Image 1 (tube, one colour):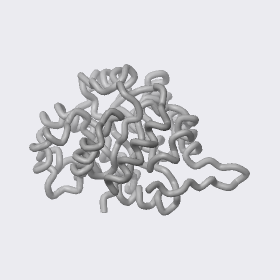
Image 2 (cartoon, rainbow, N blue to C red; image 1 turned 90 degrees about the vertical axis):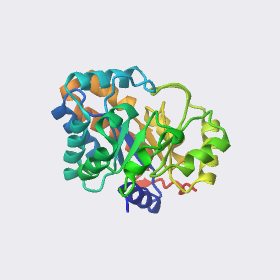
Image 3 (cartoon, rainbow, N blue to C red; image 1 turned 180 degrees about the horizontal axis):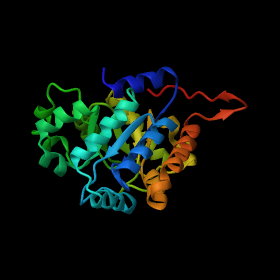
Image 4 (cartoon, rainbow, N blue to C red; image 1 turned 180 degrees about the vertical axis):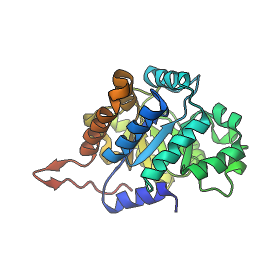
Length: 277
């Protein structure tokens, strides 16, 4: 069974939500990035989104754009990202690792080669921002025979019929974007998010995770009960930008803060949320 599925099943049995964390691979450099990633997982990330640096990250806000630029200047490539994944896998055998990427660097690497090498590195799936189902005709056969699901994004403007088409092509979990625009901080419309999450949960048995604009413990507490997990990225990457080589323990502290918001504790007794549908 894929580690993504196993993780969500385990969390559901514990009546807990997943903390999905995005961190740009190789930012600010390979060794510091490895330390940041290792400590973030130790601190409580349930699913790691390992960002493949790309020169034109159009879906991302300034924080992640600049992180990609820093990593590229340090010589980060797809093989180096896979090496990071391999090192993380050796230390964390059960934590799911998702490669979060744009299609261009993966296509250039070679899709069949990518599937083989990603599996060898311990990767558990892909989230390809700019690859809709209609354009995945080359990717699907390349992944055939490998346990590497394609995680799909659903926008808040996506009609129900389109949602159904996307979910039929998805695996791992569904990433529900919580606001329009690019990654980063922003206003969250809880009622709209709840409505969209409920629609997705009716259409697909896959877990639903909420992302974009979630950056604080208050955001996490606000949204935790609406889906199976939350995704935090820019808030972690911003710490790397501000603290560089000293970022690892500070990122870990932020992860612990977010984890505590997902699993709040009052007078020693954990609050247990009902399992998401």
